Structures are given as structure tokens and as C-alpha cells.
Amino acid sequence: MTVMWFGLAVIALAGAVALLYVDRSRRDQLGRVRQMWAKAQGYTYAPTDDQLISHFHRAALAKLDDAIALDVVRGVRRGEKFVLFDVEETSTIVAVKRPVGSDVDIDLRLKSTPPPREKDMELLGSIGPRVVFATDVEIARRVCDQRMAAFTESVPAHVSLLWSESEWALGSVPLNSTGRDWDAAIDAVARLSGLLHVLPPVRNRPVAPRPDVPRRRPDIDAGGHAPNRPQAPAPAARQAPRPPVSAPVDPPRRPSGPTPINRDAERRRRES
Image (tube, rainbow, N blue to C red):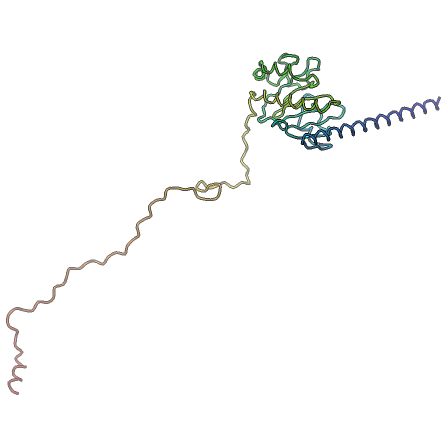
């Protein structure tokens, strides 16, 4: 009996090792295929990114903060910035950066897919082959028009989930998808991003002034220069006071009449 259990344990261990080897080989093959696809399209490729998934918290990426993104591709397709990556044993995710984010998030999933796990997602209703959930159903009704209905009818069936988070629109496809599936998923998510522009933008939050930033004098601009202002007229130069002008002094007048005779001089002239 002991020998039999030991043999079963060895068989189980060998099977586990074989499965790990097969899974590793499959992952390496998928990585090479993803890398070749990225290179052919002019995109960038990275084997892993341990911070990427932490930016998302809904739908297929709910409660996966510790997961690592695998075979990450970043690029621009038809003017839309995107990132494509795998979540191990879950799905392939496509995320398209939206020009303007919103505080209202929506979720469009196939009717056969279970509802979202997030408690703030409320049921809005069905549109085409999909069911719509939103964090604000009244505002989300703005995007549920004929264009959205036509969009849901055109989305490939392998894009099982579509949703938005702030400034991102996202979608998920199976792990065994191919390059054509990735292209179609990127196009679908980009179209969803365009339809969501009617949602109200993220509310501006006031930012407290930094205490370490010196306040600028009101008479000095950002470049440290005084703004151009009309110059006030320069005060007139003060002149030295002029001396008072006295009345002209007339030269002494000689008395009129004969000049008086110096008698002593006359006497001496006569005596000589």
C-alpha cells in the first residue's frame, strides 16, 4: 500500500512539473508572438510591468493590485495612445488613453457575463447585445443613444468586457487571441473612448498654495521684471534762487555851477 501511494505521489509530481513546463513554454511562445507583432507595427514591447495594473480597479482588473502585467505593448494606433498587456490566467487587456477623463465610469458587458463586483456600479439597462452599468445612471444615459446602440452591435464578440475608468477606456479579450484580435480590440476601445466625450469631465479640485513658494511682488512679473507702466513726468529740476535785484545806483552827480576854488592852492600859486 505504501509503495502504491508513493508511486501516485511521484506521478502527480511529474504531472505538475510537466504542466509547469508546458505553461512556461506557452507563455514564452505568446511573448515571442506579441513581441513580433509589436515590432511589425512599430510599437514598443516590455516583458513585464509591475506597476501598470495598479492604475486600474474595475471590471476584469478589479482587486488585482498585486498582479503583474505581462507582454506589455505600448503604441499609437490611428492617433490613439494605447497599452495592451496580459493578466496571467485571466485575459488580455486593451487600454486607450482618453483626451479628457470623467468622474462617471460605465461598464458594457455581454448579457452572458456576470455583473460587476464593484458596489458603486448600478444597472442602467440593456443596449444591443450588452448590459450597461454606471456609477451615475442619470448622467450615463447621455451616451446611451443610437450611436452607442450601433457601436455595441459592431463590437467583436471576443471583446467580452468594455468599461471606462477616469481617463481610460478599456476592453478585455481572451488570452489565446491573435494579432487581428488585438487590432480589432484596440479599434473598438478607441471608438468607445470617442463616444464617452459627452460625459462631464473630472471636477477641478482646488490646490492649496505651497508654503515654500515665495509670493511675488505685485509690481514684478513672472520673469522678475517690472511690468511696463506709463512713466510719470519727471519733476522739474530745482533752480538755485536768484539773488534779489537791487535798484540801479545812479552815479554821484556833480553839483551844478562853478567848481569851488581851493584858496590855499591859489595862494601858493600867487606867492610863487
